Length: 367
Image 1 (cartoon, rainbow, N blue to C red):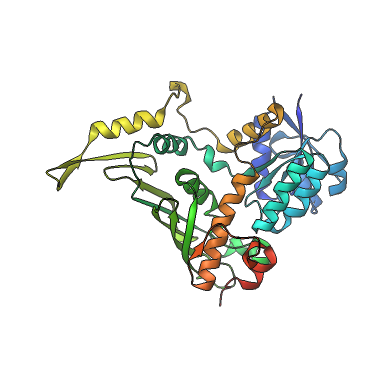
Image 2 (cartoon, rainbow, N blue to C red; image 1 turned 90 degrees about the vertical axis):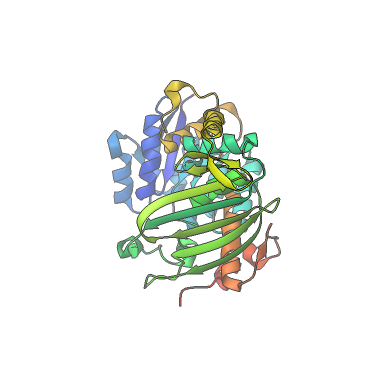
């Protein structure tokens, strides 16, 4: 069966969804789109050779029997309502990142998927980067030994023009700044690689004028088992990059992908251990075929998994629970940066920071 796709929200990010769906024409067909801006909807419906219909309303999109799944590509504050409505209408949903501004919203959407027997996926495609998958194999193998240190830096540049969109730069609409928008993908991978976060000590700042969300955030994360890890992110860096280092005593993996090992001599001097580094590389490559070494388009890999999950009646790799996990870490970052205190996870349902309203009331905004 060809899976019929509908797209809600036809801004820039929706084009990534459309492009991937068009590349997966054997599995699906984008049949209709909707946006409150009909001109945007018309452009997306014909983008890159697409031939989708344009619905006059959100209700019309939900009512179509030939649509089995919907990509929700609205701003973060407009995820909860449409996602739950789509699930109740019997549609599977792939929701753009972040899944929601708060854990309360995430849990409501996850519950709606369960109650209605539908799948909830999250468009967090970075996990499908083959190099991160290689790092995951090494870590899961235990080849690094007990971990001693980890670090993630995620930097990019967003000028004043980026915040011209009226929903950006505000807590009410964008749900935060660099941590929950630009750095979320890398932080999700970091947590996926290292496991559960136990506590967070963080700070954040707003350097750019005219916005109230953070454009710099830094945190000390403590993972289960005591592993300390540093996390820093900013949209004020001229050089955009993601750098990740995860170290055991004498062996490490890094991103951009690298395998590292030291040979300790006489308990003090060290030299590169080429053989050990090659063994880490062998583990990272696993059983990959020679023709499967290219990174591949992560959006296509994400959506291919989502579509096949529908066909195979299984959970997608990036499901609601996975999308929720990084939202909890980011919520802890915002809480710690606002209160000046170390925050323990998990965040309880009675905590004011569990709800969107509580976050908006207590979060530290730019001066």
